[in-house]
Amino acid sequence: MARILNEQLMKKLQKGGDWELICKEAIDDPDLSPEIRDGKLIVYFQKGKILTLEGKKERPEVLSEGYHKGKPLLDIDTKKPKEYFKWAKEMIGNHNISKKEFILQQRIAKDNATQSSRYLVVDMEYQFAQSNIPLEDRIDKTRVDIVAVEQQTGDVILFELKQGINALDGKSGIEDHIRKTNLLIGNTRFCDELRKDITQIIRQKNELGILKCGKDLPSKLAQIKMGIIFISYSKEEQEKFNNLMKGHDILTICKDFSCNL
Image 1 (spheres, helix red, strand yellow):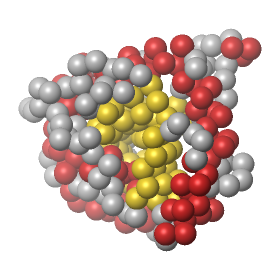
Image 2: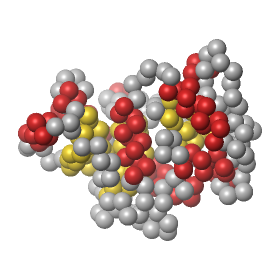
Image 3: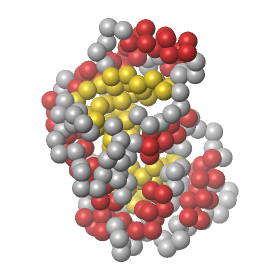
């Protein structure tokens, strides 16, 4: 389970810890997304890795030089992190990277992070680790845009996020996504690891305040299902999407930039 923080790091991030104020600022800032990755807490801004926090390191790992080349690095003051985040966001904002979908993912995650949310967003960009699996047993690598738990049923939903009419066709279109996701859902090893990861991620994110579930954590995870969130720009696009999904037993959410699921 790679997406779990050790106790050393959890203590640093929680109340009274060395990095408590960093964690709080990353949660409170609507532009930032703190995510658990490979035993680290990584703070993202518009798809850029803005800060990395690791338990065994004394100092946070700050913005990569590639984002501020030619400009002096502003180190982070762990007691006053706001200034660093403001500077780092400016540096990343100057780069022409594909970030529109990631910004939407962040908004969806932030807006669906409480016990009152129908779908509790647990993670973004989730990928099944297969390095320890024999090559002949591996499946197509499929990164899941958004992993959520439907709180009423306990079902785990693997959401794909699609924007606009051009995202529905081609190599990375709806049909290809359905095929790859069905391979994941049909893989027992993937389902077992996903359930373990989700349980731990919800617990730790709730302890840190990234999720706001209180004591009402989802107690049981049920089926693992596929879902598609389609961001439409017109009624015509909505109609095409609905026609494409006919015959598919898949949860679909069609939105026009409203991020509450």
